[in-house]
Image (cartoon, rainbow, N blue to C red; front, side, top):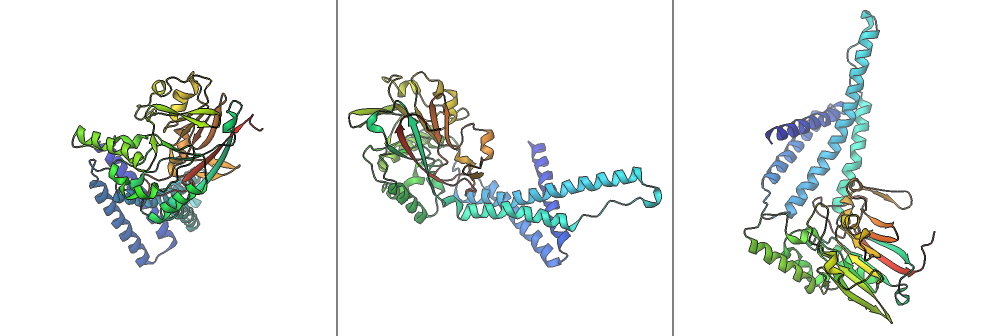
Length: 411
């Protein structure tokens, strides 16, 4: 452990030295260099203090959110500067070595000086993540987007042709700090006028009382004709902090489950309900959290008891890794699975029809949007709220509207 901390310390020191060199290369103004050093030192001291104050019995707070944002917004730009200047140093050393062995003694040159142009490029490149992360923390985290998706099913009951679903996921109410923006998002949900509203887990970060200031706001989500239903996510179990007793943890879990009642959502706990429209019905199945690397409380067998492969089924399962591990090969055939959990890492690049990328894709095969395999679909919502990093860059908070259509998929 000590060696690991020493190694991290050395890396951070080298990154800081390279970043300072970039500034020193482009300016000789003493007051600018001293100001840079003082600001960097102040940020470093604050980060050390804040991380040292972290209390595992409390978990994430507004301070830890700010600390993580400050860490990323300072470290990532400096890391890019360090990589660029290190690359130049390797080139300088290589050029000097070649010169030493190929040139005559009277024309041998010393190591070339660092080029001002390279430092300018490094600073310009570093400005991109700096401004992006800053925007993500101030504006991006509430840049709500309504994303529409139409899915075709040959065996969809006729009465449900054209049925619309609004899905939200990963509220993480303990991270919110702007009532006006959350009210705006609730209005967006209501404007969709969907037939049913589904919430796929993570109502809080850890504690039930995180949701208390927002209950009245979320209660304003209008109940559509087919109802409002929800399931639990991994954060709803209180697994990520140290509790004073098992009773305290159990009481918190009970209170979290009751939050769904307080905002007028029917919480499905490894069970299903029949949704009737006209002369037909479909099954809405809700399982508790089940993730490959997270809590596995979900029980498909219990939740789908009494259903057959011929029943049209929509499954709500928070973690999309459940789909690959169990759902898509389950013999009762879940037509559509709705998940969340990944947040799209709250960071990435999305240009419809051109590129969709986030580092989270190296962890989750299904991480954002619609996926299909063997005639079965999963839609992964990018999340309503935010967690850990107090912002979003490129992967915006999402309100999903899915239209169910009877027929074959249009090529």
